[in-house]
Image 1 (tube, rainbow, N blue to C red):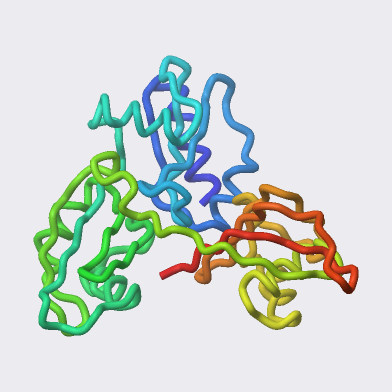
Image 2 (image 1 turned 60 degrees about the vertical axis):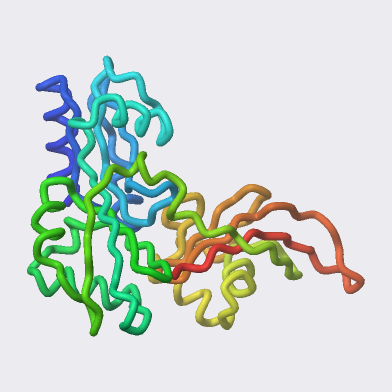
Length: 258
């Protein structure tokens, strides 16, 4: 995977054009983020949804004026042919029961679509939105006619035309810890046992500010984002107060993965 991604970065330099990987999961993204890029090439992760877990590594030559997610999406909106990602707006029939993330993912896999061709699936009451590689969008839209026991209708759109639909408002929460360590934040932030939190960290399922972190005793600071794969994320909104028992009070915004 790293060899493939490095080749894409080299192609960007040699051809002086935007190149991109296929969709990467958070572990792969963490590895790719540590790669040394060719001089003059910049890298931005883009998933069609802001804060997406699954993203494409987009490599940019010097003449493209973009240095973060927002400016890259602005460039894509101005030059749509440069964008490698399309968004599928999926609506289900109103008679079937609500469908889950697993239902939609199963329907994609049933078409023989490799997971690397699809990004995040954002489920809502009436259907979902799915980020996909643009070259697969038309095939999926024509052939994914059902999921679970529901029938589907799919429209293809651009991520910037549906900006904001993926956002569910975070829920404020607070808890106390004896020490603001990563394992303590994971335990309380995601309501799991201490053993489960440590196991998730050791297995590379926990990411601190989008980078894999294998250190359970890593100190957490205000503003940090902690993601537990398949569970969601919490953002540390404030910290520093003390409870009556002398424990640290941690205030977070919790985003649960649907």
